[in-house]
Length: 261
Image (cartoon, rainbow, N blue to C red; front, side, top):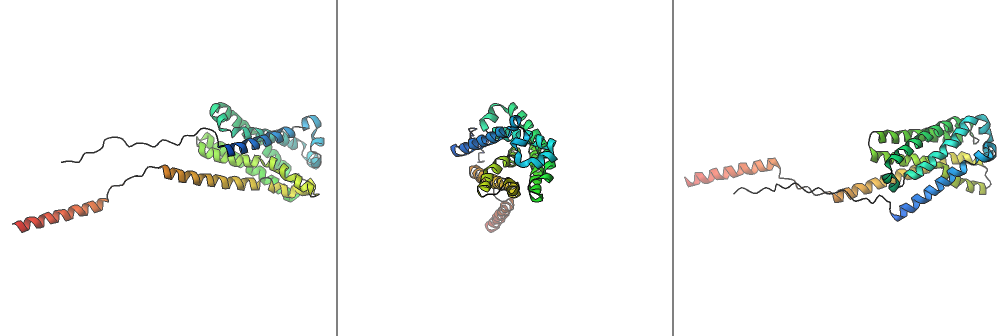
């Protein structure tokens, strides 16, 4: 009797359900990050009321050397800082995808303007060549990483886009981390010109290293989860093994018939 075959289609495992909201711990960190970013962004616009010289008196040499670039940098960069923080909230992305795209475009343009202006300002850094190289390299990588994130979004590769946007915002967040480290230098009696030699690198290199570690760790965890959830595929016997068994069976039947005769 022929064996019955199951004609039913295999059951496909559904994707893990996402609530669109991070867990309480990461959510609190995201809120703190956003508050710090928006606070620094708003504080940066004090020059509208006080003027550039009074607002950034420790950078008078840069203001005098590159006044237009300085103005563009301090006007555009806070826009990227504030918008980027908002873009990371999953519920806002899901509820208003059109707004998310337009804010993303504005974020990219702000980084292009702020990064190019920062690159023009870098040679006039009050911390000298070492600080200039640090801020200049930050500007180049900032623009390049953001451009890669935008390119991936335009290509529809949204998972990769999100990873590169995390890297981009880690560089944008340098405006906050610089202001976190600066008071420690001031408490040690080190003024900004001398401190900027270190801050030009400390403001962004640890950020980039931290998010790269986080992205790799998160990717490995997701791979392990996917492997655990994947259905076990039962493979059939090796065709060569089946053929050999059939050959041996045929030989045994021939031998049996010869004995009977």
